[in-house]
Length: 325
Image (cartoon, rainbow, N blue to C red; front, side, top):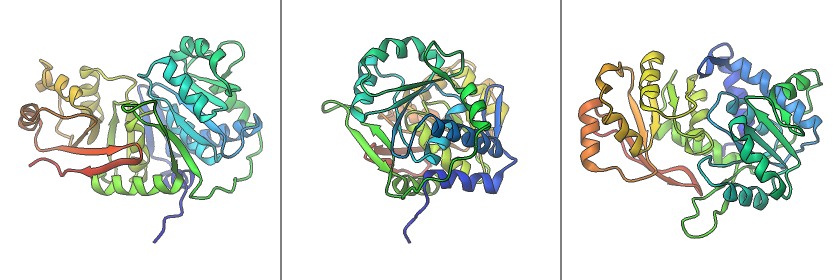
């Protein structure tokens, strides 16, 4: 049976099913599912008022933050196309990607404001700049003020979004030349989320810690967690003590790491001081893990590691290996 849901409709389903539950936390910030819907609706109205229409390309240059989730929700509801920019890339890469994708709007975190101001003269199509997490520079819009304005507007009519419409443009790693913009439809993402829920074993009421960039692979797991009524626990950067403390305090059940992050945890002198008993699944990928370090990880934390392989063109996993026994 063909899935016909769009990304926005999947978010709507989460809200209907789990409205009053906590959906996202990041530090002291906490949003319920209903909060996400309200904020996404306000931002959708504000974007429409700015003249943004379906199929326009909106770039995201964002640090890990709770706002990322309802920004993704709002863009999907507007029928626009999201273009996430990997935060570790150089400014020239970001300029190339936004020009190549013909982005009309850039949503960015205030920690990147100096970079954005330096890039701005070289951006050929970006007309609007929306700043998250702090006061915007002159000529840019602040997310909070924009949403306050949107909350006073009438809700725009739902755009006619076909599941085959492009939900996002995602750039490849550029190992064989300039990064290529991979166009992924709403239907492609709907199937991807279903596959992730099944193959990664995303459980009901999952408490998932997001320690890797949401503009990269980490963000692909937001909806699978929410569709299970779970909680997305976002940390704004990776640091071993922060991750370990968050897992213990939040009774987290799952996370996504790359091998170097696993090595840093294993080498942490106080690893044994943290309560990690709730953790049942550590997804890892992006590079090869040293067999001896994997053995060490299983010895220290148990057979809770799930390795996966994938590529941008076939998100997010082509192969997922069962948790190591």
